[in-house]
Length: 181
Ligand code: HEM
Image 1 (tube, rainbow, N blue to C red):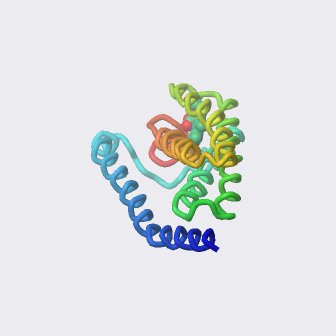
Image 2 (image 1 turned 60 degrees about the horizontal axis):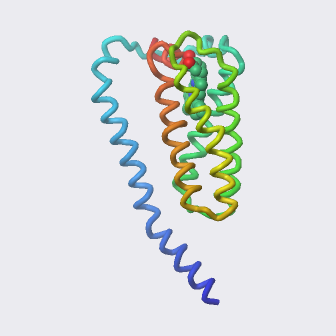
Image 3 (image 1 turned 45 degrees about the horizontal axis):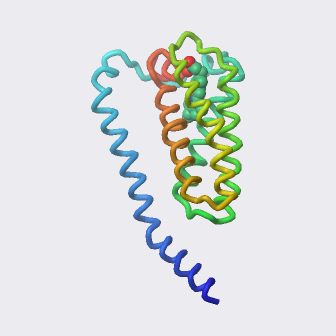
């Protein structure tokens, strides 16, 4: 009885805080994009030539890179949904397992990508962190170590995945050439 009252209180408290959380994530995204645009915009503007996506170039890319890229963008979407919706629900657990599998695939496949002369070998640090961090984060959740689970998953999402996406658009790399080069 007391338990269900506490659970109800906790979920209504979560419902009250949800809009504030969404606004916080939107603000963080906006601030990051605006500061990034201000810092790099001027330099990039001088040599970036945005154009329609070169589908042919992507089609000619090795399959391992195509799958790595597709799964990585899927992980960004699922991860954003995961961070926005309430935690601890059945959906959170199912979406979290799917996200973990996709992240392991993204990182695992990256081991088979030839660096294409892009000088981005430091990205393998993200690979190692993801391959170790995701299983530890899942086990932490199963053991009820919520704070550890939260910290690891947030780190992998922001530092490995979102930063990985930003680096993927650096001049000279495939995605840059697809839209700006
Ligand atoms: C949305 C996120 C991501 C996108 C769009 C993306 C896209 C790509 C693409 C297109 C390449 C081919 C090389 C090139 O760009 O010329 C690549 C390579 C690579 N990616 Fe990702 N990736 C993402 C996230 C990640 C993550 C999370 C990791 C690690 C856990 C990772 C690790 C690597 C590594 C190690 C390489 C090979 C090194 C190199 O290109 O020099 N990527 N990625």
